[in-house]
Image (cartoon, rainbow, N blue to C red; front, side, top):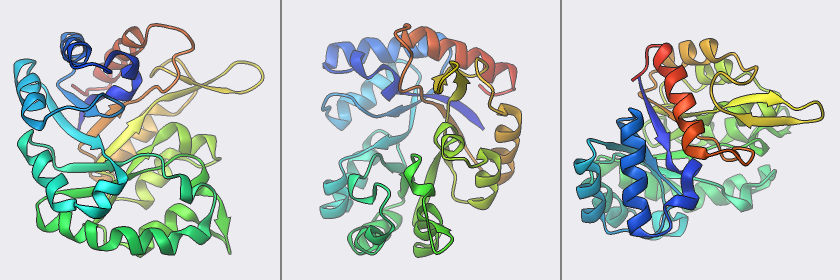
Length: 252
């Protein structure tokens, strides 16, 4: 497995191409060799390829426009191929927010695009939050999505923090979704005395060793650090702390 930086962590510093370029350099200088492109300004695929190559970086996965995935998956896959990215990610889906009844509409909208992406050599990846762990008739929304798509057409960018936030065990869910967690998000969870907070890796109470071991067994390729909220601390500093901790666990 390789560690990587989810650029959503530093999204405030990727809103112009100039800043985006500088951010990629900063991330590479920390030691990261892999990134996820998410929350950035618009970019030309050739521009991104050049910037990645210049900094010795690989883009493992993106978060892409949901309607473009639905309407023009072949073009989306072709654009990703320019900068060598196979995994095409879906971020927050508002219509699924705590609503298992919305699953059939999701299936209808993305079943064919998922097949198109597969034929193009790409793979659709769904990123969970906490609401996918609501149950209807004893089955979580996340499991309903997994049951509805073949494993080679829909993967899951399993997010360790949101699984634990929803009362689940991140390691257990990596095992449940084994074979379809090619990319995962990792962030730690600490407690401020009243509520859980996002933390850099090693700062909180999450069983990081257990999660990484389960991911290894489940076939994960990329462990991407994502800290949506750094509690007013420098997000680049937080990314570096997480990188150093993962490196100590044997990930580069």
